[in-house]
Length: 237
Image (tube, rainbow, N blue to C red):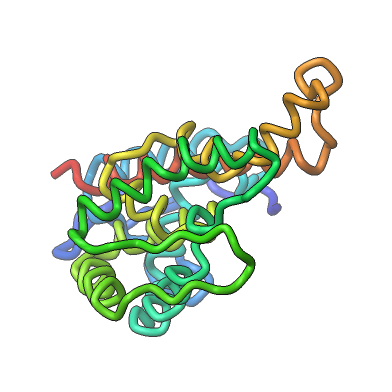
């Protein structure tokens, strides 16, 4: 957190997009790159985030700025990050179902099962699931289809895919999110399926979740909503 040092926030049109400026000077990312938005809509929203800061600049209240910075600074070595994404395919959260208790097993089948079916229909390949602890190895053809899809994404979608995969622990859910098939609240509920179930059992609605758990869940929902908005604005040409 830093003290607000600027008075005027604006953006400047360039050949590559819109540079965010503070008092007429370009905002730099941590790696010294200009904070450059691809569309005016996204630039306007980021200008508003900076303008709404008060005495202290609070990064956690500027999610669009953080996502854009990630896109510029951290999503440069795409091949390495794509390889990281692909490793999730064999360990994907929603491919490992419980045998018992019956209530959890039923939830896995109903909730996670629908996204397994979505993946199979969308990519026209099979996706293995298991009720054992042994690791799954998805088919080579499945890996190839997903790799090609990820390679085709522009920087905005690629960034959001990686963020949502890291948050949810599921490449499949992140793929559905990037396709606009699953809403922020839905991906939260699918990712925290077991935790939310236990919360119902222990009546968290009355007693509340543990403070750390609650903060983590709220951060997930905030970031998921920001990722959806980021995609909408980054494609608003």
